[in-house]
Length: 70
Image 1 (cartoon, rainbow, N blue to C red):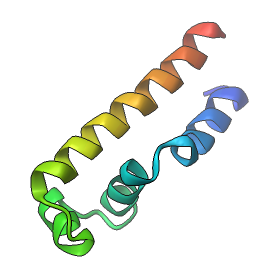
Image 2: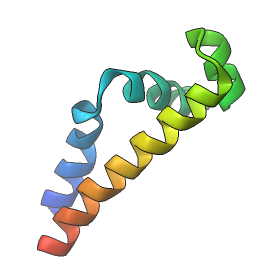
Image 3: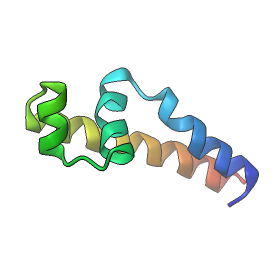
């Protein structure tokens, strides 16, 4: 990876809306399942799945935009 790509991958999650970060960070940093994340956050499992999917799609669009611009 180029330094620019690494920087984007590092900074991109901070730009996500709070509900997406609230779901994605525990999933990746604490290796929680959707069900575990739902229990910890008090959100319904369907909401956790939706936030995770939308957050990951947004991260993919951001990193793809930088990758293809280089």
